[in-house]
Length: 252
Image 1: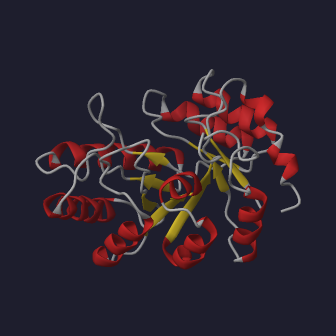
Image 2: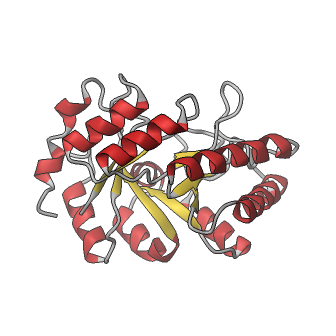
């Protein structure tokens, strides 16, 4: 099994290019991030080329203070599409493999229609080799977020019926809201574009908490998943001091 360092949480004490270098030094196989837009793409690209790591994905911007995405917000289509364009431009500049299109806090049929329309816009504008991801967030951390469950996300992907739109399957969010992580992963694997993980319920390193990630990772590998899994956890201090799990799970 290969692992990707999510630099939205790991090595946040340093600039993004230096965080990429730190991930390489720690033995990660790839990196991903949240919102890299305050860092020049040229610096990120240089660090990726220097280390030989791929940037697996980035997010569209949150929006205003307190928001968590724009694409399912009726009446905010112009802002949502500007955010999508921004993400595409940056992703192309650094050869990122995926864009997480953040939905935002909303609900109802109008919100659903808005989200589907914005996803269709994103798919039309986005190069074919970049995957679009949508991610359900758990009700404890993000109450009121439009995407609540993996089932809802899969249904929307079915309605959209466009290639290259997949689920960001975050074991942490699934564990907090739905449970039964392995069974849900196996059922949804054809529409999953990326997998992330963190301990449940405190979102720390995966060798903590109530979920046996040694078991989860083994089952994911046995199912034929060969792409890096994203370490999106909060280290609560020095990132390097939390990386013992990489050795613990090295036999997966």
